[in-house]
Image (cartoon, rainbow, N blue to C red):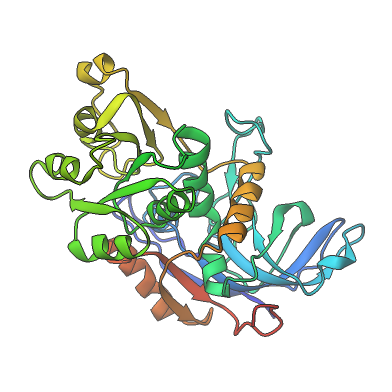
Length: 361
């Protein structure tokens, strides 16, 4: 019988409780009309999974498997689905309810993300899953199972933030990516480098800045240093001594710093606010005609475009650590501890299978 991992309900207040992981045996699913039966080989964590365990994310489910990122191999298809899918390695789309509208999800009920909530019955931390054939993309052949599993949610979020929202995804533009080391920030770095932009980063540690440079960043500074924006300005090219766009997931004092770095009319794209749920919007930002643009994950079309770009540029998502086996609860818990401490550089991945049956391996 296939296995899955959910969270187990225990008493506790939001932010104080920490739901334990529960290993379950589930019934073997049968693909319905136009569905694919997929053997999941690798799945990856996102911060929302940690928030779910802390009851800091809406509508937690104690029956839906965790995780939104998944890579697997199609083993059979339901009525009406193309037989050509059988044997192919695929990446699951991480959300539902957003087809192609540039403004946001079309579904009246809003956007539903896979894994661990009542809003979507599918999660990727399970050995087998059925999804509609429209909800997968063929996995790029240059990616390992762990790399492919690391791509979906953060890749989609980073693609929309940079390409759809920043207005500066062009060669020669200066892009600042804050908090390098997280999955979205690293994807933005890789996409921007692939597009020919000059990428600068911030981090709390020099080691992560060195690693970012190895991935193509021009330079970086520690956000823990007083006046780090002055040090960053010294790194900018003389013929373009300003930042065109900031892609940020922290919030905090980013607007205050942006007024000293961005060109007039420059853009801040905000995909997260991990420092605080509110930010100050200053008169200096108004006088500089700066723009603040919120950005969430992205549409089905943006997901398809992102995968195509990864294929074209042979981009490999950064994987921080991999543990093996769905029944390896202790080490899976260790990945959550890595995320709590913020020690990872890249994605945290669980490899459920050894890759047999995958075209890559």
